[in-house]
Length: 407
Ligand code: GLN
Image (cartoon, rainbow, N blue to C red):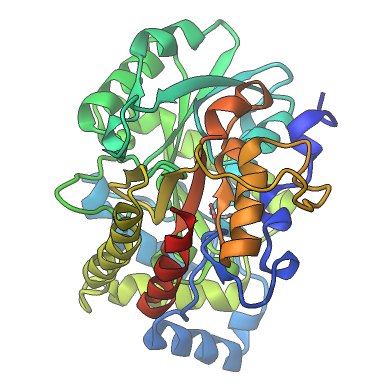
């Protein structure tokens, strides 16, 4: 089953890759920035490249300076002391960290519950390691324009999804692609189910620095009894506009971090050294520079440009509480029947064709949301395209103007 279906299908990121689209197409597809990391973080990278030790292998746990910086940044967040030797692990991006957790913990046939839509990497990462994904829907509201908090969980459905083979639940808050920030109440209910059935929790919080309005980012690991069963995932790429650096980290109890260290040591041995050093400087200075707060405010403005454009078009969308994605309802977008679609989008959901058409004819790329659903649930995801707003204001304004032609 590892070689079947979605797990080995061409991934959406390479189909909707800038390389396959016209060069003047504005990329609001794959979620990466069109601006550089802050100067003071970049110059730390340069310094690390100019030194000797920082160009060579680091300890598989991660360079000590970065682990110390993660400790200092996250201790107040978790309300506990963190041991740099046994409770923090640096990985080659959040994705490789999560993959290593699956390698370390999944046995053939173990079930992993994920809320659907789910970040697409989870599915193959689970099945490649013998796991079986089990989907619990986030129910979209039935009315038009709405807030991401309205994507709701039916806790009876979640309870019914648990079987004797369930090993783990994946939580993702702020959520990609919905932008939902899970409430304390929702997380408490998930935690109670995890405790009752002795489940591991993988909490993907890579967008934790991008939570807007009055929403509170709650870490499930901080709920009573949850530290010992939870691994929390973080990302330098999202924090410091450096998605290609591939620096991420895991925070959790030694019982999860140690086996995961064994896995990551065999997969990559260690993450790249100079950019770990730069990420350390990022975390060391972020608070005193007021960087994360200011960056979050900038993202809220970027979100506004996109949502204003959708309002002007009179189209329905999900206003996100966090992350940098807006889901647009594209169920009414139409194209000529004989439109020349490439083979890569034919045979996929209707949203693949809609997004291709919008990219080619309107000049703005986005990501079809059925990619974040299992094959059986394609029809739910087909209604949406995901637009990323991790772009500078001028680019977003230009995209907003082009998109008016869609209405
Ligand atoms: N996290 C990024 C996004 O959702 C993409 C990551 C990837 O390409 N695998 O756009």
